[in-house]
Image (spheres, rainbow, N blue to C red):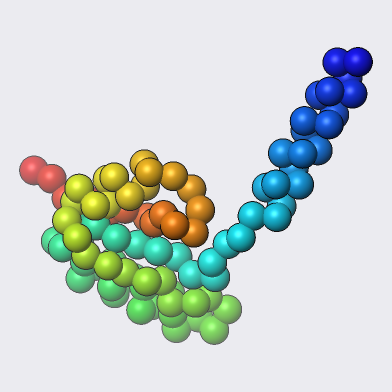
Length: 85
């Protein structure tokens, strides 16, 4: 019985993960100090025809730190920039 329950649970999780939606670009947000560097990196990545240019946004180091800790998925940023002394 436990084997069947485990198998059912595993398959349910696997189906949910594979059905998850994803975006076709990388989302970057955070420190305005790091913004120029992140923008240059994003522009260089965008020169590759197989990669979509990442979306880079400012908002402060707290946005970068909180953004990567809030969750995983299309509602959240992929890379958080932060600068600190």
